[in-house]
Length: 115
Image (cartoon, rainbow, N blue to C red; front, side, top):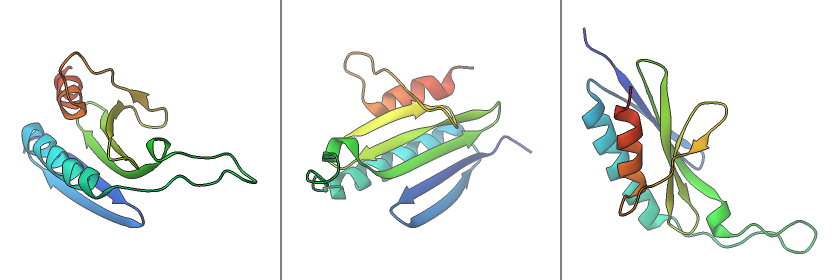
């Protein structure tokens, strides 16, 4: 029996879970769903009078989490302005720095494949 990769997609109150037998399939699904969510993700700024103003780029409207063997924990946050950001970690998320010409999904692939 091979390794199993779990993908959890949180979009507002809706949560979907999927399993994949290989990392490439899981990463392809993350990119496909992330790009779909980013296209539909447009929010307005909130607050400003009694509380601090939170701009759309500061709001996470959807989160896609990847869990796999070897304590692999990583994912993509889709922001309210349609941008995406890759991260790694579980309780303490760290942003994955993108290299020149790299998308957040490429950065996630590079990090997830590194042992």
